[in-house]
Length: 252
Image 1 (cartoon, rainbow, N blue to C red):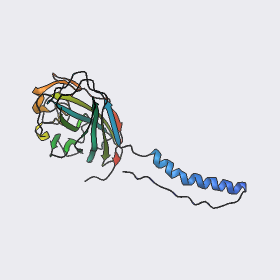
Image 2: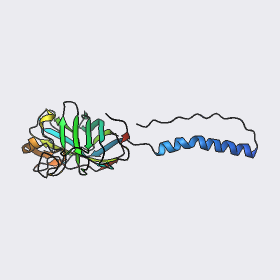
Image 3: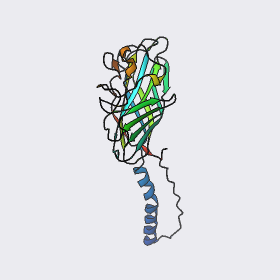
């Protein structure tokens, strides 16, 4: 992450002559220019996306599958690029209760040697590996949340997902969206969900047209609510697209 530069300027009394005043103004401009340039070129690595739930109430004990997908622009297909999404939270209010849900960290690696995409969960974080040439939606992050006693009303607004992006390479842009679908049955073990890593029927183990982030092993239990209408809408409708330039950092 880029650091903020601090500058100190020592002023020397140059007298009252016009020439000396001109020299002083030139020195001041030269000292402040690097600070202005640094601020103008700073990466904005934190992004927040707000949207709403539809009008369908969510019954107690059902599960909301919060899921996010991303397109990454500017990938060098000849080298490996890693995107990390961390410090991610989902926040909303229902009645007198405010919820702030901590979402697992996630990593997407665009690999020039990968021939098929994959997504796994190790109990702490998500890891997705994708061929470097893949340019469509990729699974970014996900969280299953079981609704509390009394359930949740329809029409919750806003629901805001935020987090910080870091990249191992310069010159990339992440365009991301999120959805939320409701399931009557779901696994509390995210590694058992069968999350689809990418869109479409190529370069991944699920040969169908489902969206990235579809929990393939639980599609039979989808129902209406959150941002989905049930049926074949297994991820819920997407929020608006947010574009962010990740901070640059060396990643192992």
